[in-house]
Amino acid sequence: MKKALVIALMASFTVAFAVTPFPGPKGHKVFLKASKSPYLLENSVVLPATDSLVIEAGVEVFMSGYAKLLLRGSVQILGTSQKPVAFRNADSSDSWNGVHFATGSQYFVVRNLVIENAFRNTVTQSSGIFENVHFVNNYYGLWVENAPKVELVGCSFRRNRFALSVGTGSVYFKKTEIRDNVFGLYLEKGATFVGDIAPIHDNLEADVRRESDEMAGKGRKVSHSVWQRIEAGF
Image 1 (cartoon, helix red, strand yellow):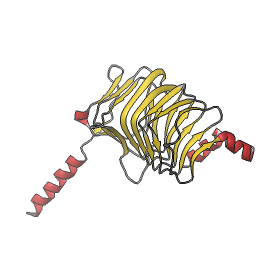
Image 2 (cartoon, one colour):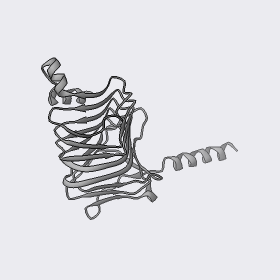
Image 3 (cartoon, helix red, strand yellow):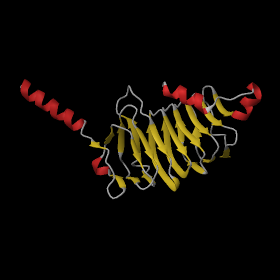
Image 4 (cartoon, one colour):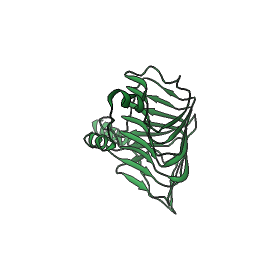
């Protein structure tokens, strides 16, 4: 009886943790299928500009501690409201590095995605759309820097330390809510933000901060090199 119970427990453990390793490109394409979900990303992955990423609805990707996903090529993350895509940490005690969009002239499309427990998610020198994307419990929900046009449509930011930061880029903000974070929206000098700030409310420390206001009050700003040193110790 005891032997049968042990075998049953081992079998259930194996089934519970049956995951597919994050795949490499085939024919310059990384394709994550719902039928092979969940996936596990154990190490950082950099997809070059020549490789594309396509993720089907319903896919879950679990990230090991400090894993990073850097995307330089075409990106299509195609979740649905019934079957969203999810990026989560594999171990509840560890955060992962985050997903970083650096797609250049290739317009990225991200729909119905949940991003949880990452250190920082970024868009750099890229244009694209986040539609119905939920940024939950990240240190930096989304940091936009030198991005010609990033659209946030029907998105939400909850329980992040810094929800949305915009550098010298353009963010178009529609039907998106930022609430229950420590800090809501931060706009650096030179940032372009188009949209209604009314859905940015009930954040603990501040809803909207502007670097220009802080510079007027303090006469200085924190440089990116200082931020990088702070982040390196996180």
